[in-house]
Each structure stands twice: as C-alpha cells, then as structure tokens.
Length: 477
Ligand code: NAD
Image (tube, rainbow, N blue to C red; front, side):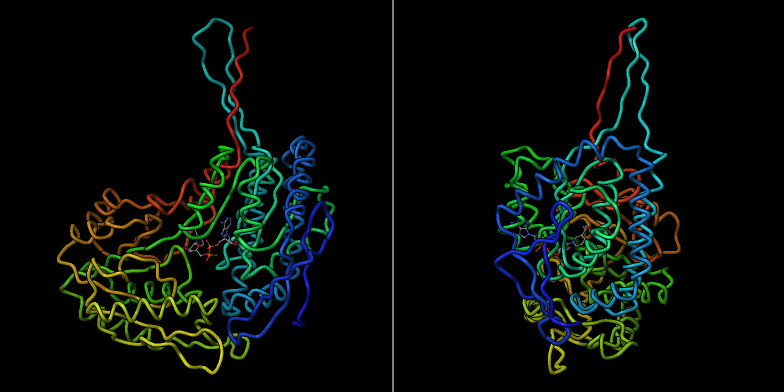
C-alpha cells in the first residue's frame, strides 16, 4: 500500500482537513498514511447532515433500508482480500484472522438486514373500555459511533447495521490507530445509492473529535466500544445533554479449569483465546483459575502450546498465529505488567520478554504461574499474549475469585460435570459465559458486560433494540 492521505466522509462527499495524523504499521513501525483530524466545524457538519437525513431515512420501509445493508455486504465480500490486507497492515492481525473479520462483517450486515421484517411492537390489554394500547419501537435519531482499534472493521458494522436498520443515521469516528479500513468502508458505501447524510465518517483524536461528538446536543445515542477510562470520560461528556449511552468496555475474562475437565480441550481453547489478535480482544481469557489436582499438568501443557506460537510480521510470513501489539505504548504496558508480576512472585514458565524482531511491537507468548488475587496482572486488563494462572482449591473459590473483579464481560468454565457447569452459570456474575468452548460470541447472541465492562450491549434482537426507544400510544375508541 502506498502512503496515502484519506478524507472524512460527510454528507456523501469526501472532505479533507487541514491537520493530519500519521498512521503506522505496527509490525515494522513504517508510515502507512495520513488521516484527517476533523475540525470542530466538520464534526458539526457531519451531525447536521445526519440529522437532515434522518426523518426521510426512517420513513422508508425497513425492508428498503435493509436492502442498502445487503448492497454494502456484497461490496465488502467483493473487496474482501483488499480490505483484509488493509486491516493487517494497520492493525497487525494475521491475514487469516483479518479475512475472518471481513467476512464476519459482511455476514453481520446481512444478519441485521434480516431483522427488517421481524421488528415488532406490542398491543396491550387496557383497563378501560374500548381503549387500545400500542407499544412501538422508533429510532432514536442520530447515532455517534466511536470505534476501538482491535476489531476496527467489524465494529463499523456492529454499530452502523443496527443503527441504520432501525431508522437512525450515523456519524462514525474510527480509532486514530486503525482508521484506514473505515475510509475504505466509506468508499464502498459511496459506490451505493445510500441516501445523502445517512452514513458519515469523521476522523481524529478522541479528546477532540471524539469529545466533539459525544458532548454534542445533536446526538441521540453514543455507541462506544473501548476502554473503561474513555467510557467514563464519555459518560461525563454526555451527561449535560442526558444523551443515551451504549458502552462496550474492557474485560478481564476468567477461565475456570476444574479437575474433571478435558484438559486438552481447555488448553487448546484458552491458548487460542490468548493468542488470537495477539491477546487484544475484550472477551478473551485474561486469567486462569485451575483446580490444584490438575494444575501442574495444565500449566505444563499450556506452556508448551503457548511456546509453540508462531509470531512475527504478518505481511512477511503467512503461517503465523499472531502479529505485533498495536503500538509502542501497548508493548511497554504489557512488558511492565509482566515485570511487576514477576516482582510480586509470579513465575515465568515460558516467554516473559519483548521479542526482538528488529522492528515492530512484538511480545513473546507468555505463561505466568504462581499468581494470586492481589497481583495487578490478575486484576488489570493485559491486552497482550500473557496468561497468568492461579491455583484454586475448588469451584467455590474459583467463582469467588472470578467475580472479585471490576470487570464483568466474559467468562469461561471447563468441566465434564453438568452440575458444576450449572452452578457456575447461576453464580458467576458476567454478561457472557462459555462452557467447554473457546471465547467467541455469536452475532445472534447478546454481547454485554456487568460492572465496569459497560452499559447495554450489542448483537441479536436485544442489541438491535438498543438503537430504538419505545413509544406508547393510548387510543380511546
Ligand atoms: P480507547 O478507549 O483508548 O479508544 C477507543 C476510541 O475512543 C478511539 O476511537 C478513541 O479515539 C476514542 N476516544 C478516546 N478518548 C475519547 C474521549 N475523551 N471522547 C470520545 N472518544 C474518545 O480504547 P482502545 O484502546 O481503542 O480499545 C481497547 C479497549 O477496548 C480495551 O479496553 C478493550 O477491552 C475494549 N474493547 C471492548 C469491546 C467490547 O465489546 N466490550 C470490544 C473491543 C474492545
């Protein structure tokens, strides 16, 4: 890819900004392109364009709106290889995973389009004679979608597909780390006849463009995916306008391995979950609680599996399991967390260092044993290929430790005992639990967290309805 300059997409026109931000390839730290730092006026224009378009868009039959989503899905599929390459270049994930992300995005657009004929209201029985009570779902208006960098392309669809299908219009801000795929998506949208102003992209920094969107009185829903710290800032920015929020924040997913588990399955699923996207996934195993009886065997097997992970520059080798971390700050954070864990008594079983590959932000796949609940590495989101392990005496202790977290997004348990699995389901306080299976959500499910992992959720019927409000009408006959 040649170094290129990208432009905002406002009211169906590509418009540049005076200030530019540089975007780098994390595998080799080379410059990939320059993106706009949208001005305050451009943020205003984008919101105004979305506002102007919204009533006409909502007035269309839902099946017509769905038709545009399908058109875009087809364009994504037709350009899948190019898009996957862009994602790998700017985000660092391996090509196979980038292709999964692109195809999942197209399928997600189609999936949300299927809801067009399934959106339902309700008719309620009344306490009065000859009265009819209708509940109907209506769009909120203008959505501001703020995106993270880890699955940047999929997150576009996760926000715009339910927003548009239900009659909202949208202004998206991609992460400044991985914005290029979003401009490529906008190019595909521009090739369709989607009405002017329905879909807009403004790019730039969080503190400027992101804040401009989230503090704006003309935005009816902020749909944000990112860190807890930014989520809290967005809540404060949205507070004066009482803007509705949908916050998908961080995770610290516990994986509980009981003594009766299929250990090979647990090892395969947990290691894959720690290595996928170089550990930079909100739902993936961030800490393990293993029952003492199988702890040595588990640690031995998972260390072998992690040590066999192939990593490097994904554009140079096509058989890798993982690429680099997204930037120098992430690399420094992961390295610091491992050093602190070792200082607090953690034992490095494999890995434990920055990987010197000449350039880029690579960290060795790492297993840390001997961890305990008071260690930072068991409490703070790592977002890297590092797996800390704590030995527990039984399921009760594992559940208590799992729940003792400021995060509540995903969790997993490995056991052959149905009663143990059911007990975990009853007592574990998380939005999502995987039993004997890798951490990966389905588009028809509901991805949401408790505690600081967020407010509201995404996917499926329940995620779709977050983009609506419920209007009740009383008709006296
Ligand atoms: P981040 O919070 O640093 O940035 C996310 C986005 O917010 C970026 O577009 C950024 O520019 C913007 N932003 C930053 N400051 C802002 C402000 N003051 N106002 C408005 N916008 C602002 O997060 P990240 O580093 O891009 O993503 C990693 C985090 O995202 C991790 O914590 C991860 O767990 C979380 N995540 C959660 C989910 C989920 O579904 N729950 C999915 C993916 C990632």
